[in-house]
Structures are given as C-alpha cells and as structure tokens.
Image 1 (cartoon, each protein chain N blue to C red):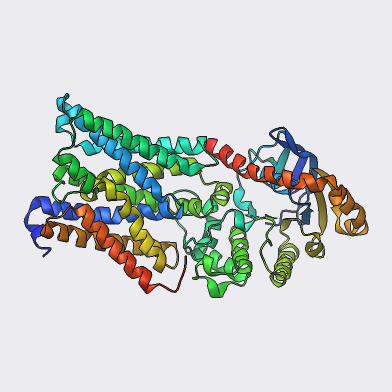
Image 2: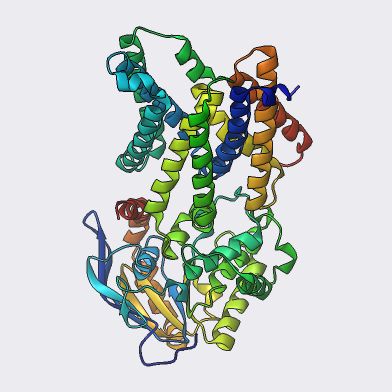
Length: 274
Length: 277
C-alpha cells in the first residue's frame, strides 16, 4: 500500500481537453507524490471533475497523458488500488434497497473478479471498513435511510475496503452538514498520516480543506498554482484573484457549468460506445 | 382444490411452469425495477406478440412453422427488440426512455399488420394475449426447465456485477466491470423469460409479473438480497392462487394472476403505510 518510490502516484503531463471546441482544460501538468494530500480547488465549471475523469480513464484527453504509478492510464489495470468517491448526488439513487454492508461490499467486487464470490475474509474486510468510518451500528440499515453525512461515510468505506494506495474524492462534502464535514476531513487526514495513503480532494470550498491538506492545486481551465500548502496560504489573495477574480468569469460561469453537465452525458455515451 | 392440477399431465405442466415463471419473472424484475427500466418488460412483451403473429402468418404458408410453437419466433423478436432498444437508447442519449415507446408501438403496429394478413384473430391468439392454463405441452415444459436453470445460474454467477452496475454504474465501470456485455446478457435473459412467461400469463400482463411482486417487495425489504426473497415469494403466491382460481372459475390466468398480485400490493401498501419510498 505504502509504495514510497520516486514514481509519483499520479502524473499528469501537458493534458488538454476540449468539448465541442470549447477548451475545458488547457495544458495541465501536475505530479502527486505518494503520501501527499492534495487539495484540488477551483470554481464550479473549472474543469475539476473533467480532470478527475481523465485521471480515472473515463475520458480520454485530446492532448497529453495521465500516468498512475508510472503506468499510462490506458494500460493501467490495477483499479482496486484506486479508490474513488464521487459527488454523491450524481450517481446514487437514494431509494435503492441495499444495506450498508452490501454497498461497502461493492468496493471489493473489482478486486475479487468475475466468476468469483465473496469469501469469509472478504466479509471481514467489509466489516473492518465499516468500523473504520464508525458506521458499525448501521451495517444492516438501508443506505437510503441514512443522513447525507452518514451516506458519505459509507461511500468512503466502500472506497477503502479494497485497501487503495490512492484515494480520489470529488466534492465529497456537498450536502453534508458543517460538523460532519470537519469530522470527515479529520478522518481523511488520519488516513493520510497513519496509513500513508495518497489523497486527492476535489472541492470548490477552499476554506474548510486548507487546514487538512499538505499540497494545493488551483484549477480554472489552466493550473494557476500547484505547491506546498504554506506557499498557497501566503499567496492566497493572489490565487483567489487569479482564479475567481475576472468578473467576466461570472458570466461564463453558468455557461461553463452547463457544458460541464453535457460532459457527464457525453462521457456516458462514450463508454456505451466502447 | 389444487389436487386437480396433479391429476392431469397438462395441468401439472402448467402448474410447474407457473411456479418457475413465478420465480424467474420477479427474479429478473428486481434488476429492471431498480434500474428504472420497468417499462422495458412492456415493450418486449409487445414485440413478442409481433413475433408470434409473424410465426402464425408463416404457418399458413410454410408447413415447418405450422408445427412450431409460435412462442419461439416471439422470443427471437423479443431478443432483437431488446437489442434495438439498446441502440435507440444510444441514439437518443439525452432522452433514453424514448426508446421504449418507439419499440412498443413499432411492435404493436407490425403485429397488427401480421394479424390482419393472417386473417385476423383466432382462439390461439386470444390465449397468447391473456394466457392459458392449458398451453403448456411436454416440450415447452422442458424448455422452461432448462431456461430456468440457465437464467438462475447466470444471475447467481454475475450477481455482484449486476448489483454494482444497477446501484452505481460509474463506480462499477471504474472498478473494471464489463458493462456492455453484462447489460446485453441481461436483456437477452429478460427477452427469453418474457417469451416463456407469456404462455401462462399472456403478453398483455407478463410485465406485471416482472414488476408488481418487486413493487410489493420494495415496501418490505431491508437490503438487496431480501428484495429478491420477497419478490419471488409474492410472485409465487400470485401465480399459484391465480392459476388455481383461473381453472376453477374458468377465467384467463393472466387476469387472475395479476389481480392476485394487485391485492398483495394493496395489502403491503396498507401494512407499510408509514414509510415512503
């Protein structure tokens, strides 16, 4: 799990992505070393989710390349080493009759593989992951009956159950109350400190995350800043102006956002075609 | 009351076939309902009718088809229809649900043309529409037995993948689960089960047997595995009560099975009034 080598956990090289001739990402280069906790911030529609989808191989960039543990994403096949927690609202039907235990088990399905069943030791792992996020009491409850913060914990457990070396979280705290958000970030910091897990946290909420992360990257089409958290804190004002400052962006903002949603569909269709 | 079903071969075949259908239809229906594809069963059952009408029409001119149970041609149409729906869901990717009414009306339209060409309705066709207690012969029965074994085996084998895809398609794809082959396999199974189920419940009501027991189960189940348990339980109860009452009251079983299902549904809704899903 804790593979401290010189190869970065995630390496993005000169990546560009356009949708219908609209540039969404321009020439992004970014290295995420093993054991770091990166906060990837940017306004809505800045291309954060698109970048993550390129990293996960769900979208193919027009230019540039993504490497996971030094392996180009097209050839990467150890997906159980990557945990991903998406924006809950996007991909989850809250009326779905599945228990917490069943949902967390899904995190092992890719690792267990086709034509195989979950064994005793797998079930034990599931119980451990549920305990790790403090949801033991709810193991047999339907996921739809839980609060937003509790559901998010369950999805973290699902991502953790396969012992990933890299955990990517895309706006995980949307719709979660403030107190749970802090507990949640504390839990992430522990995973980073104690287990040496590499974390990438995507968020538009700069304030809350900055006490917990080790590095910050600011994205709005281009990468405006990437470096140590302390440097970011010292130059915060400038960063904010660079990213959010241009008043024009406010108008473009909604526009971009619309396109952003198209992306989901676009990408959906792309996979169906595949 | 039920003992008469064990005195005659044809009734025994119907009862056993009914029991297998009461298991298979809700079993697959669980996945249809949670993926919000309940209406898919309707579209496919209508296209099955087209195949049956086509087979009957051919039977007037080609001896091979006169002897063949038209249900098999129905199954072929149903499988083809499920593939067309998938294509259309891709063509209208922002309005995926459009694929269902398109295929449904195309199926009925073409079916009506075939029926007219074959000189209109006859008693056989009536049985295919509303079901029959006497439709199953020994060969059909063995087809149903083998299909039940194959479908059950495949669902158990791919349970975890189908479950993951139904719950969260994006995550499932990231985890490396082969979405398209599994979806295709699932649709073919649905098409085949609709084909065999309609001999008992009839085309117009086959989708009810795939969705109503699941609708009951949704009110009670804690977790996905329980959903299967309750859905199959309600499916079996309605098939048995429906078949027995159809025989004794001389009614079409499609109607009685669905009415039994509706009564169970009303019952569970009243009993679980407090929760909302």
